Length: 141
Image (cartoon, rainbow, N blue to C red):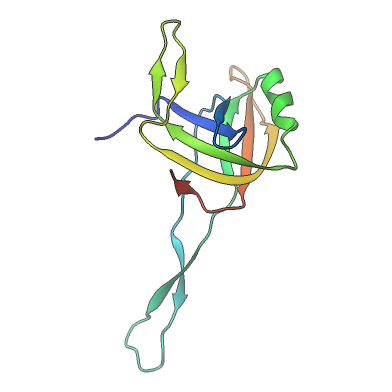
């Protein structure tokens, strides 16, 4: 069954295995990558041959709408290695908010966060970009 990007959350690990929503995001990156191909071709081969190498993953970028309070809180996380996750799925509340549950998948990893305000133009929402440099493999919980 396909799911929508609605109810996708960037989570921050607090204590033990407790997570809380970090900030509302407008996009999320690939949560994995293709492995590098290591060439094994010899002079006897008619075509190039390969084996799979290690996975590569650059910084994970999470665009968000700029909010001064959220920005200041994110700035306090810079320079620290913390636990993060992307959760799919949530419960609708009577007040119109959504509580993250991860019922459709949880992908967790450790990393270091950085945040900056992004450029803008006329008639556009001011944005910020959150980048997390992963220091562990992204794993499905």
